[in-house]
Image (tube, one colour):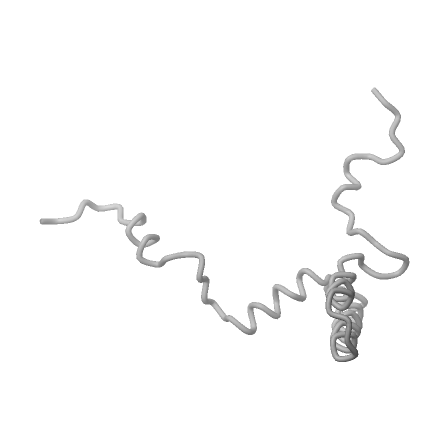
Length: 95
């Protein structure tokens, strides 16, 4: 066996860039694609908001999922209720 410096269990650790989550770099990457002051302000504000939420114990991915849940609600557009209900019938249909 090889003597690696990192154990496989470190794969679940969130990536970090200095003191913040590395996934907060996505809004800054969007700013680099569309270089303007309003885009910079939106990217900086979103990074700051997600950084504050992370300091309170809510990671950015969970915060975005909670935001999606607040905006969309229980609607799941990828699932069709009729197909799901058709699969759940346990009794044979009567003719």
